[in-house]
Length: 150
Image 1 (cartoon, helix red, strand yellow):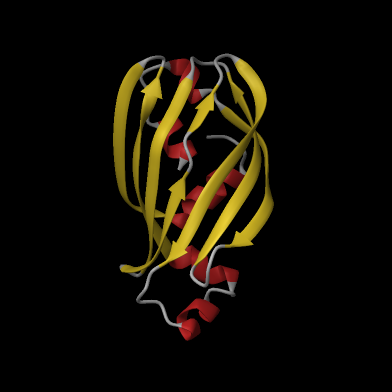
Image 2 (cartoon, rainbow, N blue to C red):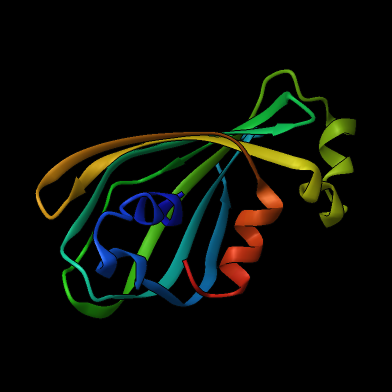
């Protein structure tokens, strides 16, 4: 979701040059039976101005059926630096998902069939921005991440 916000700032060439240097999941903690708290360590090279993500929310769907929601904790990216950031997110499964349906997603290839709707609010160099995206193939986001270039 963070990558989408940064890419949406295409009016400034420097924002297009932001790169993911590395990324790894540091922890996965169950929070009840239907949600997981995820902490990620992500290295970013930001040659542009300060970016603040105040609100990031996503809906994960499989062939149009809602399977879960993702919420990213607020994060601030320092201007013109390469730095490591701790990103925290919560993934909550939809109440309509049965245990059998959840188990099907143990096969990682199923994620290729998923899409994501995303709503982002924040500031880039002091300018308020809001972006919404619909039906983004999760496979594309994972490929962009694996290519390490936003």
